[in-house]
Length: 366
Image 1 (cartoon, rainbow, N blue to C red):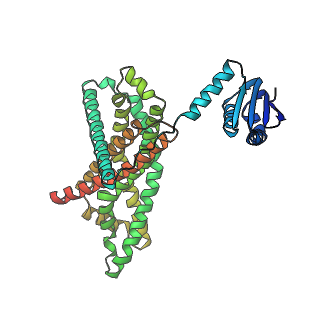
Image 2: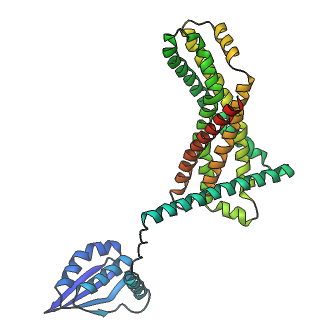
Image 3: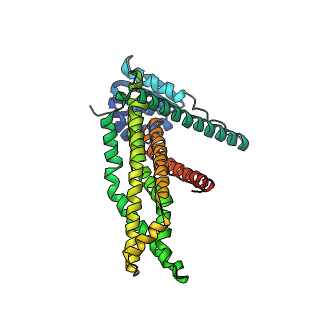
């Protein structure tokens, strides 16, 4: 039954009789007339004996009318669900608002941020320790490693990224060759372009660009998958059943990232050298001369150093992505925030590691 309002005015006294179901739609329709009558009333009587339904919006309207009038008298509703809704709404409106946390001074905010960063660093170190312990346990009991999951992640992280890796590798080689030819042409040293591009690709750009691809494609996927499981409380369910999430979910992803990164780096190197060779051919240099320059400039040491860096980059990206997923919060933004943290953290980690490797290789004379 649709709610209706009957108004009776007797001098300073006003009687408002509500009938039917006072839900949100009826409240919006009756609100202007009811509040106007309550403001003009000296003594307001709210007759609720004809109410058949009441929700929170209707209860808010009735309590609003009570506050607008100088004196309010209630007639009904009878004890039961309608009176319970009205009482709960009255208690909720009477409750004081939550006090805002006091703002800290600038120095205290700096200390708070430092403590949080330190706690986050300790959490990262703890997660790395858990992964190491789980890996050692898997070496002792290799049947605990889910090979099917490792193969699935190898396919998703490696095989499906081959096309993008080859495309970017060719473009990087073309860009490096063209950009290097401009200054080298001034000194008549265009024949040394293969030396420059080959060393840059094998030692630095090949592993670094492959790591950026892995962080963007796979690191975010790891974080999204594990973050969704965290939001759905599947990770908590595994712990309750006595299953270690690190050994069950993280190790297959880490192993796949470590194995696939050298392959992606090698493909990036080969594609970049092919792109450089195409540019050198367009500049009039024969393929034999390009190959001879590469042989004289790069060796197995350069290739192995780059592939080792790539494997370490893969481990770092896997750790950052998995930790971001397992530490995801609750709510609709948790998965997106975890994926963003995985990509940003992965790229920052590989750049930092690349700087460490550069200093280490320089000191070792590599």
